[in-house]
Picture 1 (cartoon, rainbow, N blue to C red):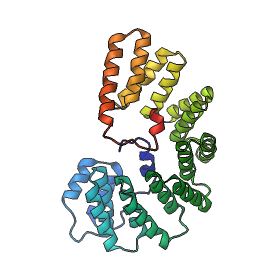
Picture 2 (picture 1 turned 135 degrees about the horizontal axis):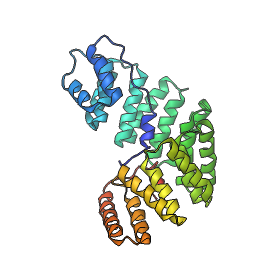
Picture 3 (picture 1 turned 45 degrees about the vertical axis):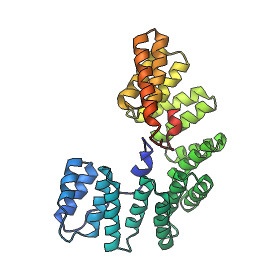
Picture 4 (picture 1 turned 60 degrees about the vertical axis):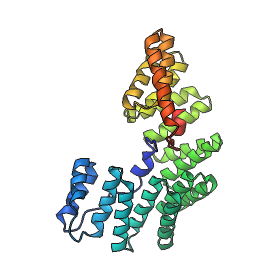
Amino acid sequence: MRTHASLLCWALAAPLFSATGDSGQVQKLARCVKQKDMACIQASLNTPADSAPAEYYALAARGYLLLKRTPDALKSIERAIQLQPGNLDYVMEQGRIYQRSGDQVSAIRSFLTAAKAQPGSPAIFYELGMSFFFAKENERAIRHFKHSLELDPTNDRAEFMMGVVEIWGGHLEKGRIHFQNALKLQPRNPHYLLHYGVLLAKLNENDAALANMLEARKLDPSNPLTHYQIGKRYRQAGKLAEARRELETAVHLKPDLSPAFYQLGSTYRQLGDEPKARAAFEKFQELVHREKTEPMDPIDANLEE
């Protein structure tokens, strides 16, 4: 799945397991995973500890995910659950791994198991909402996000995702309300600001849209989708030099961002640079052909429009 901040869901999902065991190898693996040091993770996983504790296998699951070895991640988290069947953190981690792999049926099963043991957990109902969202069951997703908010009114992620679901359903004004609520809870979240800006552009509130996007860029200049959206707005406003700068930054940060190449090609053409325009359009066609076999991240898909 092609994702960007919709890696947001995974990044915000659960804290790293704490390495409290006596095993030096557990401590080392915890450091490697926290630092996302791939070589260190690989070395640690190649030399498993004798009689490793559950915590080691839970950390190994995180490590395998970073290495994009989902089947091994599932095996590791299953082993952790076998060793500590009452540990709900491990059950939730199992659900998130299934969720990320696209197996929403198994993910939901894991989350429901956790919900039976802890029915008042807003995090569990949030994750259930995410799995129903990925399964394109929007009404059930909204129901679970709403319940998560009832349990914890400060859950900005649930507010944000309710906005995403409403917008996917064509209910832009409802989406606006949820995005505004999420931003009241997290006013400096660049991902929320970018999504809100794109929504405002859909509603033809262009000045406010650009203001939110520029604030998102200020808070996180590394997001290529922010530069793409700003560049597109500048091009529409006839600010071609500014558009070129933003779009060139977008494709530098994300060389497979196909719509940015289309906008860049159009910008070059308007600036009279036909060779660069032709090259950008050729790259756009190459990427579009490649994307036909790659599912788009449903959270950020509207940011690539």
